Each structure stands twice: as structure tokens, then as C-alpha cells.
Amino acid sequence: MGKKFQKKKKAEQLEIVPVDENPPLPSQRPSDESIPKREKWINKQRVLVFAARGISHRDRHLMKDIKTLMPHHRPESKMERSKTLSTVNDMCEMKHCNKSILFEGRRKRDLYMWVSQVPTGPSAKFLVENVHTMAELKMTGNCLRGSRPLLSFDGKFDEIPHLKLLKELFTQTFGVPNHHPKSQPFIDHVYTFTYLDRRIWFRNFQILSEDGGLAEIGPRFVMNPVKIFEGSFTGSTLWENPDYVSPAKQRQMLKKAAKERYVNRVEQKVHYQATLPTKAYEGVEYDDIFDDNDAIETAKLLAEKAKKKALLLQEKAQKTPKDNLTKKIKEKQLEAVKQVIEKKKLKGNKVLKQKS
Image (cartoon, rainbow, N blue to C red; front, side):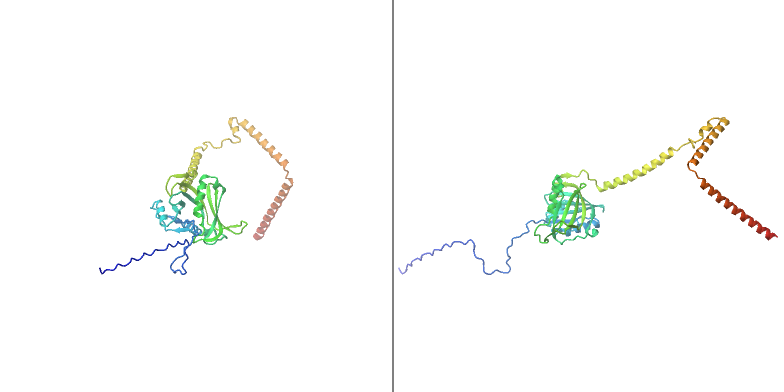
């Protein structure tokens, strides 16, 4: 047949090249490609600091001071009072925050502060008292904006159980994370939390020297703990302050005490009028003289009492002799009388001359 059979070519075998574990980097890199960096900011604490409607001007300035001291905070507009506190958890989730500080005002007088760990909890409610802002105090201390603080706690924070929980909550909330983008790599001020009179006293000091010299910056306020809840703004109460009395209750007690003072004063007036004596001049000195009807005996009694009085006066005069004084007084009296007589004589002589 006219067909020619061609010999099949042998298939080429591929060589197995070992894979290099560390391939060499390309000599050139495009400008759009980002360089992977290892982040030092590991503790990513973000705190949502905001207030509900109804706080006073001083409370608003306090919130502003706290924001300036915390570079890791996130701002938020005012929350409506009609909303429940559980909505704060949703707001924190939208802002990518895991801590929150909420200021809540009551009757334009009282200020309450919530510090919460979102969304698991716990959360604590405080009554803020004795508020003094930075603008009010005008202290000499100063610190760098965005610098990290040291947190100093009283020794009782390690002894009392509920204070241990609050210490951890304050440490995570007020402590600025290391290598935070908005913070400065300096530590030049101290937050002090002191437990005194069943309240937590907050102070902010500047570190002047390594020896421990301090100067107060401000603000300053006192936190009276009310309750600690298991969840974030919800849940069962872990601890409740037995000595807490609401400010409205205190004002009510003061008004009641003032009302009681008025009632006591009225009662005293009624008692005075009811106990007025009906007979006047009771217990007179000579009342016993007029008991008898005999006039001669009464006269004798009066004479005896007059003698006794005279003797008493003599004894007093002997004890305090005043002869020299009495002589001088008598002499002056005589001179004054002589002068008056001479004046009258002169006037009489003048009248006679005019008539003649």
C-alpha cells in the first residue's frame, strides 16, 4: 500500500525541581503594593463617652474634660431620654467600642455616671458629687495632650470584694492602651482613686520630678457607688450600697425637718398661752404680813423688817467706807447752790435799778 508508517516520538520526561522554601524577593516592587507591618497596638480598648439629654452645663464641661484626658475615646451625640439603657450596647457595637461611660442627669441637679464593659458586663452606676472642672480650679499643673497616665489605687481596693471588681473596670476604662495611634509615648500624669467615707475620690496630678513631686491638674469629683450589675446596663445586681440615699430623698428629709421646726415653734406658743398664771404677784416679799386682820401686829412686823433693812445697810456702809467721796460731793453741791443764789441776787438788783 502507498501509506508509510512513521515512527512514534518518545514523550519528553519533565525534570522534578525541588521547591525552595525561601524564594528570593523580586528586585522591584510596584508602588501600589503595601508593605505588611507588625502592629504594636495590641490592646485595642475603645471607650464610648457620651451623655443623655438633661445634664447641666457643669456636667457637660466635666464630660469634655474626661474626653480630653482619654485619647482612646469615641464621641457620640446626646442620647434621647425616651430610649432604654440597653440601646447603649447597640451604639457601642456600631462604634466598635468595648467600654462605655454614660452621663445621665436627673432634674437638672443630680448627675449619675455609668461605667460598663460592653456587651458582656459588668456595669456600675455611680452618683457624681462635688464636681470641679479644669476651668473652675485653675490649677498650676499641666500635662501633654494624649499622654498616657499612671493609675494609683488605694490599698482598700485590694481588700474589699466589690472594690476589686471596680478596680479592674477602672483600669481597663481609664488606662490608655500602649502604642495607641492618638496617644503620646509619654507618662506625665497620675490618676488617683481613693476610697474614703464610703466614696471613691478621683484626682489628676502632674508628675513634676522623679522624687514624687506632684501638682494637681483637675478635674476632681467624687463617685458614690450605687449598684453593680452583672450585665451591661442589665442583669441581676451583684452588689448594692446599703448606705446610699438618693439626693431627692435627702432634700425631702431637709424639708420635713424644716416643717417640724415650724410645728414645734407653734406648739411652744400654744403651751405658753395655756400655762399663763391666773393670779399675779404670787410670792411677794411681804405677803405674810397681810394674813392677819390685826393692824397693830402688822405694824410691828413692818417696823421690825424696816430695822433689819437699816442694819443691813449700815453693815454694807461699814464694809465699804465712802466718807471722803461723800464730803467732796457735799462740798460741790454747796458751791453749786451758792452760785445759783448769787445769780438770783444779781438778777434782782438789775430789776430794781431798771424800775428806779
